Image (cartoon, rainbow, N blue to C red; front, side, top):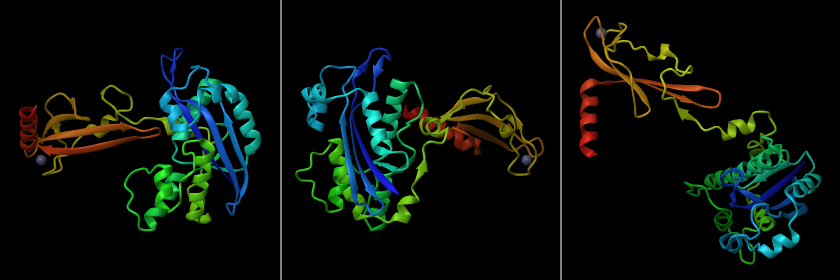
Length: 296
Ligand SMILES: [Zn+2]
């Protein structure tokens, strides 16, 4: 079994064809480890931008990659990816510090090869997630995502002399962090298979609230309400209105005359629709609305 710790550097030039800025890969760095985390080999390549002849100064300062270096040593995306595939083989477990690298790799493969997958990764572990959870288990208070440098410092590693934000250096530092908190069984429990056909469709799907009552995903059965007092089928007395993520209407019970507001929200996820269904007393609802409008 082999692990690869992969790190990418990208910049965000304007892409005329797409009419927006894109995250263009500029450097790939990686280190391959055996299952005891001994280093097997290293990988590092620069990619020449096809959108700009000059790297912006912030990127150059952050990465120490200069325009001259990119123009001199940079290869095409295809060449870089092919070299990487050859080096990586196809059975290693790939790790990156947070899954944002997956999004950027996907963007580049979409752009260059018109595909919706990242063929250079199959078995994958989000190393940031694993390391952070290990640190939390060790009693650290961590509430947000920690950068490579900060995590290294928290683990007592020296980052002096490391050219942080060069891809290879970052991957070596990540490997060093992994050695500090390595538990094979726990690490492997984070492994996912990104080569399954719908992995990236699922990853990039943005959940949304359905606002249109005529949307076929709106299950009309879920818009019925029972009287909370006596259990009879309540009757809707005004048309549905959409407000604050919910469809809302007023209901009245034909048996006991109890009146209330029924609210239903439909949220679409990749492969399901989650329904929220609740009621609010009419008086509270009106007071809240009155308060809201006086606040505005
Ligand atoms: Zn009733």
